[in-house]
Length: 82
Length: 207
Image 1 (tube, one colour):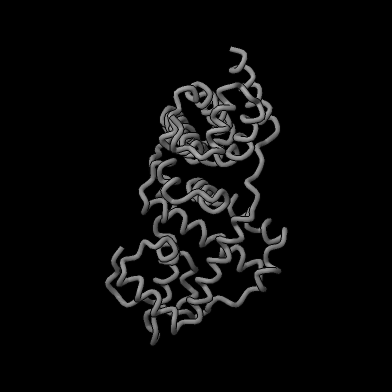
Image 2 (cartoon, one colour; image 1 turned 60 degrees about the vertical axis):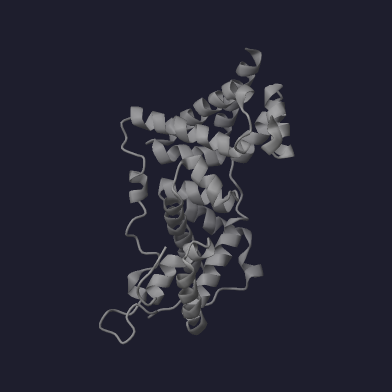
C-alpha cells in the first residue's frame, strides 16, 4: 500500500490494521510511526485497537445450538454405520 | 502422507477415519460455531446456514479418507463449508461472492464528526480524541467480554466471520484468505471494519 499525502488522524484510524499486519510500504510505515510520535490521540487509538484485539482473543468461540449439535452427531453416527 | 500436519491434526484425522466420535465432537465444538458464521456469509437465513454446516460435515466425512494434509485440517474444514455455502447461495440465487465486501466499503472507522473539518487549521485531526480506558486488568472481566461478543454478533456477516476466525479463533491472515478465498486486501478491509466497530463498542461501554 502506498500513500501520497501527509497523514491526518482521520487517515491513521483507517490504516491501523494494515500497520499491525505489516502491510504498509516502508515509507508509509515510517510516516505512520512519525505521526504517532506527536499525536497522543492516535497513539491512544492504536493502543485501544491492540487492547481490543487482545480482549477479543479471550472471547469464547461459542457453542452450536444443542439441537444442531445433536443433528451433527447423528450424521456422524449414520456415516460410521454405513 | 501427513508430513505437513501438526501431531494434533494427524491424531484428529486418524480419529475421524476410525469413526471415533470423540474426535468428531472435539472438531465440531472447536470449529462448529465459526463454520456457522462462515455459512451465514453466503446464505440468507440462519436455518439454511445450519443445513449448510450439516451438509459440509457430510462432505468432510466423505472426504476424510482422501485428505492428504496439504493444508491444515481447519483450513480444509473451512474451505468445505465456504464452498458448500457458496453453492447453496448460488442456488438460492443470492448475489454473493463479494457483494459481501460491499458491506465494508466507504464506512469510516471512526465517526467523521470526531475530526476537525476542512475549514479548520488542522483538518482531519482529532476534535474529540479517544479518552483513556480503565487499566487492562480491570477491562478483561466477563462483562467486557460480553460487550465484545454482542458487538461481533451485530456485525454484517462477512466481517463477523473474518473477525471470528482471526481474532477469536486465532487463525493467521493466510489461513483466513485460504479458507474463505479472499484476497489479502479484502480480508484486511473486513477485519479492520470489524475491529473498529468492536473498539467503538468498548469505548461506548467505558464512558
